[in-house]
Length: 273
Image (cartoon, rainbow, N blue to C red; front, side, top):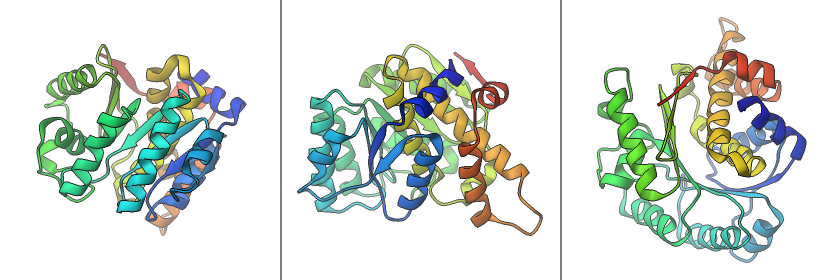
């Protein structure tokens, strides 16, 4: 099933609208293109509804937040929902400021994105009101590890069930749940944390996968997470001794470009709980 989700992205070649942050926009665009989908990034209030109507999926990223972008996100989100296009919310840094927290909660209430993806600290900030965030990175107290895995799986399931959508907590171990089941995914490299925007890239990639697999949304999200993690593993293997995080970023995108069903299904490491 995971491989079929990737093949659908490549075959359908859908246009994805990403309102993302200026720190990672170029890498997000290239990641979506590497998957086989197309991408457009427009955040002017005057055109977001038109652009959204032309697109098959919408990714909303709170990374570099400002008032005009908030308005644009809401307009785009409502338009996407009216057309029954999938919407993904990436609540970057939520809990770090009232602006971010309130914006994320407003989008959840007014638009109800189909998928929410963040690190475990961001998910806890959304659903528990916690503020122990560390910039845009996961708080070390929240890291998902083997010792805390069972509790984290239960927490993510409860969040997804209460919310009525798919919740993704990405990190050293990735969790993907619709409330009934949870994919526990063990792909990836810790060095991916040294590359700015791998989470943002994953959100863009997930939007392409979901839009291309509307009848299998949970599986498509898991497939996107595995794809990104495997790309991190392959990219790291191809680094020369003198190369660092800048080259690693390119290697990850290249690995997504060359990913196929055989690679994805052969290297995916996950369990379903």
